[in-house]
Image (cartoon, rainbow over all chains, first blue to last red):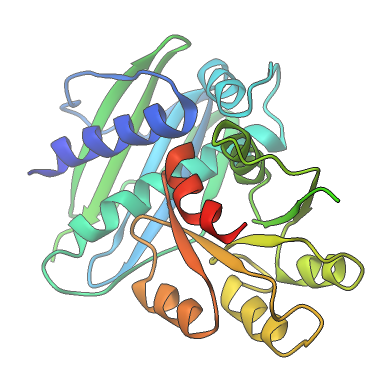
Length: 152
Length: 124
């Protein structure tokens, strides 16, 4: 199984078992995305044998909708609940991918999730990294799941 | 007297998800206590004695392992069963350590209500 299949499998499992929401994967992007508008990015870092990060990028509307699905309530602003829910989603996704990332035998540790939100922001892409960015569709719109791993 | 549970997780979202999963699994608790880390949990346990504790492992301030150590050293709460919650790729070392410190089981995220019931049900 490659990273793309593993990300799709883990994302579908998390959304379907924890949020009871169907997600539909799209084609992996061919160019990295670093600039975001009115969005939220939740990230978990990998350290140790492999270094990099797992990130979920969603527009404010999609992040609010997913949080609402997560908590079973209506959410109309980017508040602590949204940041916490998106961080937890990133944490679970990174945790699901960790055994696959460390399958070469080395130890990999996860950071606590961090969340960036703003009207306009740029995320730095790791220099010399393998990356994959996959869009997923839900009823609220589309979000991206990205994995970056530093080349060894 | 109704049953009670203490849910320890730094994520308020996860505390709500766990709470919902318990209900969906048919595990009804009359009282649900919530703590954001081990420190808050010990403060609650100074006054309350829940039937079971569900605790995250990775938390700021006091993680699940340190919490288990403190709880195990307190005769008034050491016998309350604790189930740990960790991510699928969570540290196996920490899971093993939690078992050696007396944790009764482990639930891995993402989980379904049935999986929660399988671990907690026999302890109630």
